[in-house]
Image (cartoon, rainbow, N blue to C red):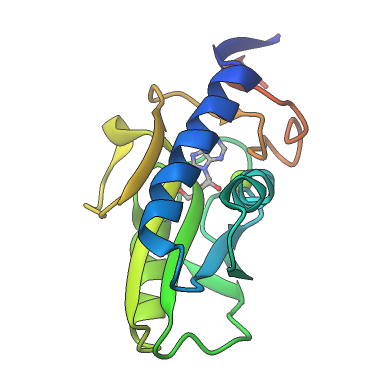
Length: 175
Ligand code: IMP
Ligand code: MG
C-alpha cells in the first residue's frame, strides 16, 4: 500500500516561490540573468518562478541523470543527457533546482557551469533535504526545508508519477 502524507500545501509553496522571487529580483533586476533549470524536476518551479520574477531574464535547461529509478539515492555518477546550448560566458547564471538532496547533482552542475566562465553563479532551490546531504553545496536562495523522506508532487516524481500534484507529499509504503 502506498500513502501520500502532506508536507506542504500549494499555498505554502506559492508563498515560498513569491518570497524567493522577491529576493532574486532584488539582486538581479538589472542583470538580465540566465536561469538554468535542471530537468525534469525543475519545470513546475521554474515556470512559477519566472512568472513571479516578472523581470528581464533568459531561461536554459540542462538534463542530467543521477537518480536511480524509484526511490534509490543517486549513485554519485552524474551523466549529462542534454548540455547547455547557449553560452554562459560573462553572464550572471542562476541555477534553479527543485530539491537539493545529497548535493551530488548540484555539485556537478556548478562544476559544469564554472568551466564555462560565467560572470557569476548562484543557486535557487525550492526544497532543501539537508539531512541527506553528502556533498556540501552553496544554496543562495532557499525555499522550504523538507524532511529526509521520499517526496512527490510539484514536479517531483516517483517513477514519473505524481509530478502533477500542486502540493508536496512524503511517499510512504512499498510504492
Ligand atoms: P541529489 O543529487 O541527491 O541532491 O538530487 C538530485 C535530484 O534527484 C534532484 O534534483 C531531484 O530531481 C531528485 N530527487 C532528490 N530527492 C528527491 C525526492 O525526495 N523525490 C523525488 N526526486 C528527488
Ligand atoms: Mg526524479
